[in-house]
Image (cartoon, rainbow, N blue to C red; front, top):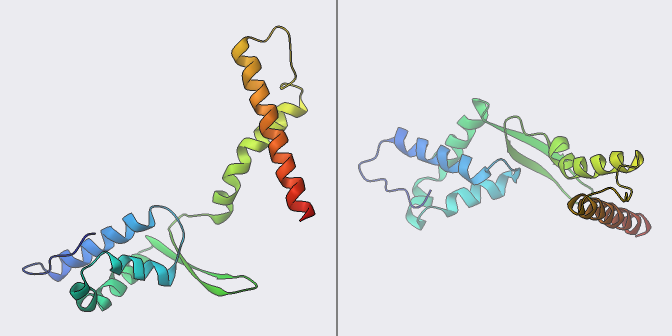
Length: 148
């Protein structure tokens, strides 16, 4: 949302605009709750920020109450807080996504499917080489993280 022009616009239109902007700002990712509200208001002109302070919070609260957005509590050794996420967001699923490819490569490697074979085409040989290099890099990073 870039600067809401409030002159001649109904409260429902303003609230709809704020909700649309909130969903675009999240774009399927988690956001710290306070930063989310601040960034949502940052899209408005300075005058509108003052006028729309409560409307922004009410519109976001409505999105939460209708189940479009979800607020999650988090706690780390350094801080606690709240994350706002789209409904259906799974931090475990999102965090596991990069490992799915590695897990698939590990399974192929365990069955010796990544081994060199003289009958491989050039493109298959290159793909296997890339997969082996990817696994080697991954293992090195894991080892480095474990020793740090």
